[in-house]
Amino acid sequence: MGRLLRPLLRGTTYTRLLHLWVPMLVVSVWMFIDPSRPWVPALLLVPVGLIPAVRTGEGVQARLLLLPGDPDPGFSVAASATWRDRLRTVLWLEVRMALGAVSMFGCVWLPVLVHDLAAGAGGRMPHGMSVLPSVTPHWWFALLVPLPLLTLYGVVVGLGELVTLCARGLLGPSAAERLAALEERTEQLLERNRLARELHDSIGHALTVAVLQAGAARAAGDPGFTDQALAAIEETGRSALMDLERVLGMLRESGRPANSRPTLTEADRLLESARGSGAKVDAELTGPLESVPGPVSREGYRILQEALTNVLRHAGAVSVRVRVGVADDVLRLEVSNPLTPTAPVPGPGQGSGLRGIRERAALLGGRASTGPDADGWQVRAELPLR
View 1 (cartoon, rainbow, N blue to C red):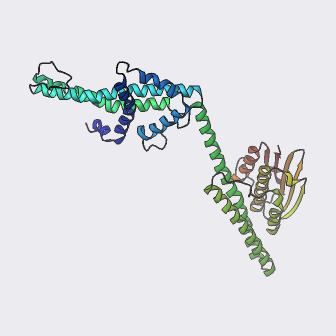
View 2: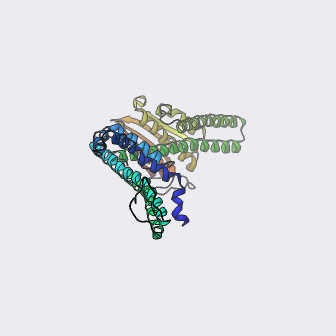
View 3: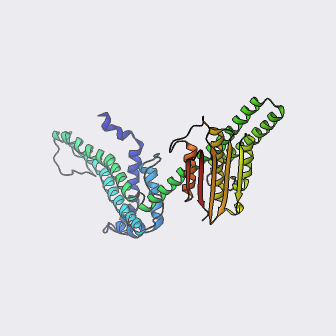
C-alpha cells in the first residue's frame, strides 16, 4: 500500500500534471470564443509546431516540469533543424494537448463522481453539478467509490508517466544532435588524454633530470660540478613549473589556445638539459624548423622530450644520437642510443610514454616506431606538415 501511495508524495507527479494542464489554458479561452468548434486549437498547433524555436521552448518546459532536477533528462533544447524535427514537434504538441484534455476531464469529473457515489450510499443525491443526477440512491454505491478513485490515481500518476515517455521519444535529440554530442564527448576525451600526456612528458622529464643530476653530484664530490648540477636542476624545475601552470590553466579555462606550448625551435633547451645530465648528445637539426606548423612543431617537441627522457631514465648517461629534419613536407625525428646491460627493454605496447609518442604521431596523421635497433634502442617518428 505504501508503495502505491509513494508517487502521490513526490513533487514530480504534480509538476507533470501542471505540464499537462498548461495547453488547457488556450483551450479554455477558445471555448469562450466558439464552443461549437473545440477542435480549432488542435488545428492551430500545426503551424505553431513548425516554428523552429517552439521545440526549444517545449524542451525547456519538459526539463523543468517532467523531470525536474534530472541532470540528463534526455530532452533536446535545440531549435528544430530539419523538417523531421518540426514534424516531431507538431506531433508532440498534439499528444500533449490530447493527454492534457484527458487529465483535465478526469481531475474535474472523477472527484465529482466519488462525491455522488458517497452521497448516494448515504441515501441522498446531490443537487447542482452531478454525474448521477437521476439515479436512485442506494447503500451499495459505497462499493463503487474505489473505482473512480483508482481511475483518478491512474490519471494523476499514469498520464504523467505516459507524457514523460512520449516526450522522450518526440523531444529527444535527433540523430544529428546525438552525433554532435558524441563528437563533443570525443573531443573532451581527446583533450583530457592530451593534457595527461602533457603532464607525463613535462613533469616526467623534469623529475628524471633532477634525479640524475642529484645522483651525479653526490657521486662526483666536486663543488664545481655540484653547482652546475644544481643550476641544471633549478632550470629544469622552473621549466616544469611553467608547464604545470600552463596545463592547469588549460584545465581551468576551456578553449584556451595552445600557442604558449614549447615548439621545436626550443629543442636546444632539451638537448642542453640532456647534456647536463651526463648524456653525450650528438644532435643534428636540419631544415626550416621555424616554418613547421604549430601543432606539428609542438607535438614534435613533446616526442623528442619523451624520447630523451626515456634514454636518461633507462640507459643513463650514454651517447645519444638525435636527428631532426624537415624535408618533402615531412618532419622526421630520430633518437637512438646504445642499450646498457642493466637497461630494461620494454615489451610491445608497454610504457605510457612510448604509447604517448605513437598516439601523438597518429593524431597528426603520421607514424612512430619505438624498439630495439641493432645494438641499441631507437625512437623514430614521421609527421606530415600538411
